Length: 58
Image (cartoon, rainbow, N blue to C red; front, side, top):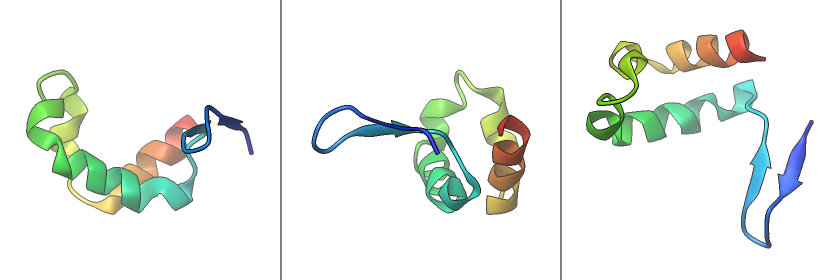
């Protein structure tokens, strides 16, 4: 897996299925803000939607 350490507390990594629940939670927490620019946000209703997205970009 690709991981790039930015500093002691930040890193970049490729998404994988283990990230689905955390990503879904972040999307839901910021839904009102995100949906202004990302039309797919309103169709992200459950963790399974996020898992499907991750699988499609892997």
